[in-house]
Length: 168
Image (tube, rainbow, N blue to C red; front, side, top):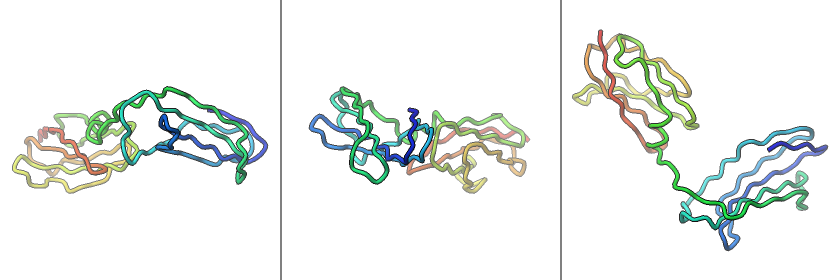
């Protein structure tokens, strides 16, 4: 969403149920001039019932004031099931090359939280202790013997595992 104003603005996005109860809210404050708000993150403590009788309301006020200058509401908003952490990790993480002889490239796309990486041999012993990967990372596997390993990617209480083959 783009906007232009000569003053600072408080912008709020609310998700409400059909009884007008606020289920989630996101807000930001803008500086005067031309601005752009493309993303609001709404966090829900309890996942509402999957339905289509919710609404989203966007409100813009002058910063620090109670008077709403602009407001719009989208009715009949549907809530669909959100992905689990494991499903998000599975779709966000790609590794290459596999098999590898030395370096393993890890790419994380569209996942906003920190991800830790550990590598285990097939007996469950740690081959590489946990390291943090943000968006991209390269792990040196040169010290490992040839074999199959299990990569564990962990974040926000969930994890996924991927099989890695090392050919030295």
